[in-house]
Image (cartoon, rainbow, N blue to C red):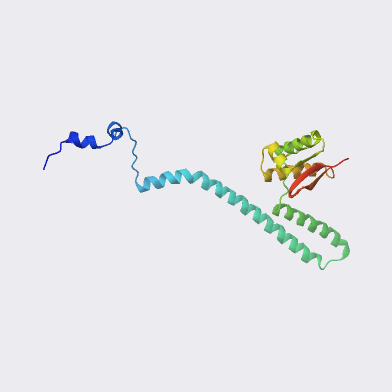
Length: 185
């Protein structure tokens, strides 16, 4: 057998592999124990855990307030069942207020923000500038650069701010598409 020297063996390797040798001192290697890794993970998620805990505390407080309101309403209803007509009106008022407070806690009313209002104003300006005073939802989405959900919120805000002035119709020729129309005054 012939003895192959190292020069011949190195000539078989690709040239790029021979020239791109990286010394071990240039590569960063971190060695962590399991406990060190657990500590790093615990530090990283600690702010999230605190936020979740604070949100849970807020929800617990709100749930306790809702339970208190339900108990008050129930006690007022039982108290009302045996009273005469003069006290009944007073208790009805209190019970109505309790029901309203309970409804607000269960389903809070969301007021439109500045962005929604500005989008509604942009839609209004766009419709007044068009000769036919109408635009498809697709056109409005493109004009505002928003998605369907945000467009629906803006249209809802627009229609709430000036009721009876706008209407939604189906697009002629394609019944799947909707059009926002400015109605005559």
